[in-house]
Image (tube, rainbow, N blue to C red; front, side, top):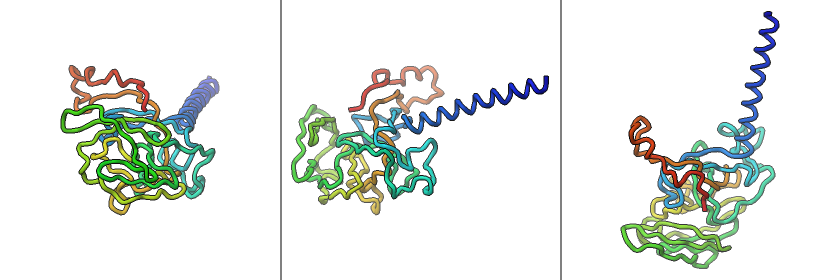
Amino acid sequence: MANFQAANLWRDAGSVFIALGFALVVRTVAAEPFNVPSGSMIPTLLIGDTLIAGKYAYGFSKYSAPIGSVPDFLLPASKGRLLESPPERGDVIVFKLPRDPSENYVKRLIGLPGDSVKVEGGRLYINGTLVPRRETNTGGRSRRYVETLPGGRAHEIVENSDRALHDNTAEYVVPQGHYFMMGDNRDNSLDSRVSAEHGGVGFVPSANLVGRVDRIMYSRDPAVSAWDLPELLGSFRQGRFFAAVQ
């Protein structure tokens, strides 16, 4: 009887380990959830959105791991990515902050390797060409525009004004193996317009890309406490459940 119970125990333990191993593999290879803690990507992403970042989109680096990052001796950051597939301009990407890889950021890819990028009078220029935008509202303090990037990809942005802190920048040339990221909430985003030396993002190395955001899993207004049961159900933004990210 004791031998039979021991055999069952080992069988059950094996099943648990197999299930855990499968979950870790899926989380490594397929996708990982991330929560949006700031408004830097409004209107595309809201505070309280929980995203699904597809790790398979760009191949795998030391930061595309089940928990945290893998040791350098297994996959050095200098080696870039395995099975690399370059991102496309306009992708919304989760990445590790270059100056502090313990932090996850989510921004939109604006500048590819070799591009020149600058902002002048609140307007975005890529490779010397003004990026067109079309205003979609005229009321209120903030204005919304649809911006169309080179290649034709369009997305919404928010501007409080065209005279904010980062609405006039130097011209940046994106190094090979790096990317230039910006938030869609242009006057409330700490992004590649600010260098890492000055507390910003700077250029993002390819190895730091974690995954592409294609869909919102669910969304909840964080202003409502999880313990506020009468209001909890109404705090879920049902229209954002499994919503595609443009």
